Length: 219
Image (cartoon, rainbow, N blue to C red):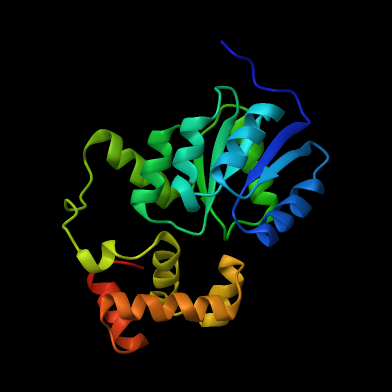
């Protein structure tokens, strides 16, 4: 049986937004038992960095180009435990990375102290989830999910992962500025994604888009 690591915990950050990585690094650097040993903004860079630095814990973004968090999980050597850190709280995202080997899943609304505690817990062998997210995993692995089998939806399937993130936040009533802050991107970029979402879903305005999203239980 492998013993849990002794602090300081060596942490590697993976997220395609540099500003967000900077914020997480600043939060965890305040902790006496945390050491940031590397960071990456893409899949290939992450795999190479993780295999080189041998961290105890990887904080892993779910949606990135070239395969996202699942691709990182497939490419890294055994050893570090991975804690997914994502803006998405969708069941399919949670289940995909847990099946891929992640030890837990938290959303980017988490506080710095809660995130540090999550790092400690996964390093010590615990699984870390919010109650709702844990339910997704239990339902998936026990086969008791009440969710219907997914149906083909060409309009929804045409959205990129980032456009889907923007759609979820729009459906929750976020303003463009709030979405920009949540995803750590510019307001102009949010506007571009929102325009693409409206075009791809064939909706005429935001109110219609919100109703469209709610009918598909996207929130």
